[in-house]
Image (cartoon, rainbow, N blue to C red):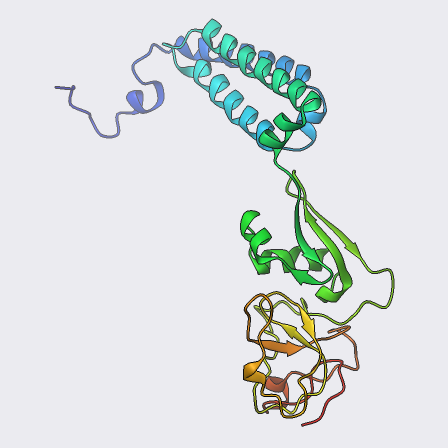
Length: 263
């Protein structure tokens, strides 16, 4: 059986079972491993430090684990840790070479860009592949100054996790509003009681369709994505001329934002 542990044994808590002189060895181990790691990172090149791809993230995790243990574990020889670090960096250099010279290896290691939006319409399948929710996409679009999906011609989720947005230069078509954030002010959902006569945006994917024909029930209209919930499409949800939301007027129904209509 293990020896009985004495609570609040300050010597055990701070020094463990090693002699105090081992602290000096820890200083030497840490300095040596740190300098060796700096040298190896210098070998990886600037690109490896600029942004973290899946390959580079694996390198960081491997280097951190291999460099940490030999710094203070007396049973881990320094040469073993240094060899592991050198092997990790060597594998990184080899994979980087293969990524540059082989399209197949690059696709396997770094993946491919994913198109999330085309002509103002969200691709729910692409968002699932990218592991992004609708709110995630809207948040990043707002950071790019996008107010409604109709402004977006293409939206790509790049290999490094960044979003690339291409928007209309001028006069974008109306679309699904992304501002204000839906958590603060959800868009108004059209109901069968609304006498709405303007373009509508699907609340699921953002696809825009014309107003219902006279006598056409709203409940019978479905989007190509399968969505059945609609909101008035808008050209600029933050325009000073936009009517307030029904909650702010204390009533239900009414005109859609930025689109002529009657009640």
